[in-house]
Length: 146
Image (tube, rainbow, N blue to C red; front, side):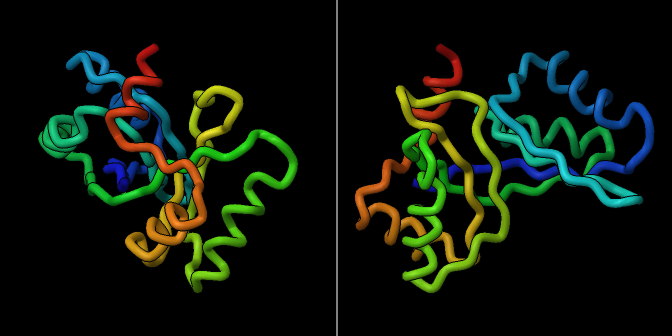
């Protein structure tokens, strides 16, 4: 199951991230998890938000550049080698990781990682065929709220 991720391009200047967060908060939109990468002039904020379409519209209305992309949430044993097993599955399937980040909750004794692959459908098929726990968006949102 693929999830929607909201990616927002931010000017690298004081207050811009706070402005975005305040806009979401003022509209009752909760950030489930996020990742922020920066360059000298701008940053890319990647967000998992239950109400991603509404958040995208609000942000674009305030001048932010926002885009929806697909990611996959994968459960992995929280132990040495857990991530390596996922990467081996994808390497054997001929798929490259574009980026990834860890989720802020655990799933029982497992960690949850979010991935963007160069071939999302093929990656999903490979993960499911190998028995890896791939989370559906509803399941992910429910776990984040509990």
